[in-house]
Length: 416
Ligand SMILES: CC(=O)N[C@H]1[C@@H](OP(=O)(O)OP(=O)(O)OC[C@H]2O[C@@H](n3ccc(=O)[nH]c3=O)[C@H](O)[C@@H]2O)O[C@H](CO)[C@@H](O)[C@@H]1O
Ligand SMILES: C=C(OP(=O)(O)O)C(=O)O
Image (cartoon, rainbow, N blue to C red; front, side, top):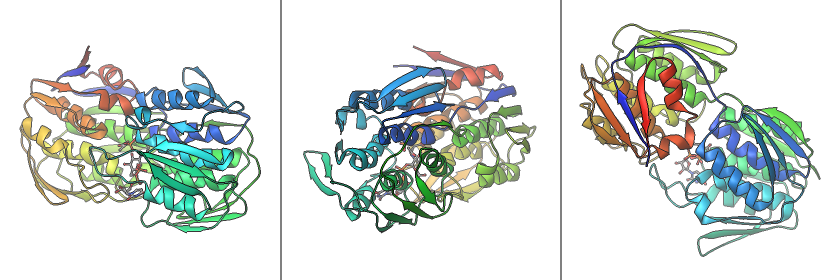
């Protein structure tokens, strides 16, 4: 099992190119199931989750050709509407095949994802929405079986804001009969990116970027070309790394407008940020100041950035309160950060972080994707060597992270 060995203490300086967004690429790949024509994609990130998704979609008969960051999908020969447990258990986003399969082929058999390290993460809202559109759904032996001659548009109000729930229902609604209104829809930029691709494929969607999506179903979708948006969480992760370790780094091929709240928090921490249409520069010369925040849905503070900011807070001047409101168990990194000398206590959904002057390297274990990123950031800021185990979590969602960090001066190596 691969590990990362990091010797902390180097300032980071230079340029990093940001990859396409994992959370946009995954639903967008599933949108390839909605048409018999070819969908051409660019800026697709190199990630384990993308490999898992392409493996799953190929098993269904989707033809996928890949050339670096470009991918072409063709759904003319899909012959298997099934997502097996073996793949769904390694990547929850596999649930995103459910909506497209029922909408285009009238049936789907998809393994229930089950729980995950950060929370129980049920998919009841995906099911409730499809049922409201007329799908007959049964759950048997750990699988969701869905059937519908043709889905029918209706008004759906989800109990809570759900990102992949909105995406699944949006893809289903694109091919349903009549009008679907999705109330309480997620407004994450990745949902908008998917919606923009669907429109390019011939879908009729209004309210894109708002919490009320109105879809007039069409009989068929056609091929399109699309560039996946930049990964705002990868962007934020490198910004936190510089804020914690110090330095001057320019992130290229990214945007600042979808990270407003996180950028405000970094400024509050003392980082100097400048940006243009497709770049962000971060300069950090001093010890960061502690910043408190609570995670919420977009455009609020992203839960996917909570662990990375907490790592920065560990070595900050002052104390902070970090409140997690989206997932019930997303503090797995706390005990590992404490092993590096951090001082964090948990009180319910809030972590109280008392900044310490220094962290000291130690062997630690990654427990989930963003927890892994927080350990990398803490290790970059720590004195001495940190060995991070179980980095397969990191590989799910970061495109060659150690290569990007080495290029800006970090002392980091992958140990096979
Ligand atoms: C592939 C992808 O895009 N993953 C992102 C997506 O995950 P994902 O789409 O799984 O997260 P959701 O937005 O659905 O989850 C939000 C909350 O709603 C709950 N819930 C969700 C659906 C449902 O049917 N029932 C239910 O109770 C969840 O348990 C969670 O507490 O959004 C999360 C929240 O921004 C991010 O952390 C993930 O990185
Ligand atoms: C929780 C995340 O991803 P997923 O929904 O794929 O588990 C994440 O990207 O931080």
